[in-house]
Length: 150
Image (cartoon, rainbow, N blue to C red):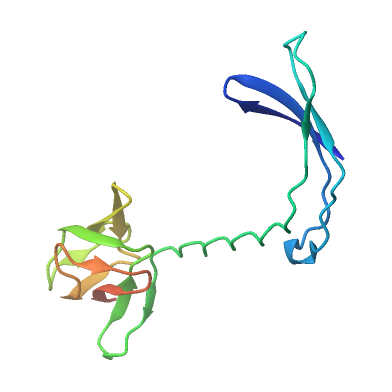
């Protein structure tokens, strides 16, 4: 049993929660016994009876996969390595053009995701062979952005 404080409409309640198991799909039985929730720090407020839900709790949604860092990947075109989008977003600014020499860490382009500007760096020293993405293009995780050669 674990104890928590919960604030509802500016009133703080102290609750006890029992963990049933780590796999939520195991939850098939719900207790019908009433539970008492006691307000904290109110002094004269009476305990509030609370009933358990009558239906099983649905399984929690699985967390989204973590985005991968921008890294070169083998290109299917054969000339150079691709720098791929680490997260979905919109290409807001291109910082390089084809034929440009870049140093490792230099910004290739800006990718806007969730109202934030993300710099996409060059993974190694090299030459930009092709800028695959265009300004304003919407890209998904793993889409090629720039093709480079060492």
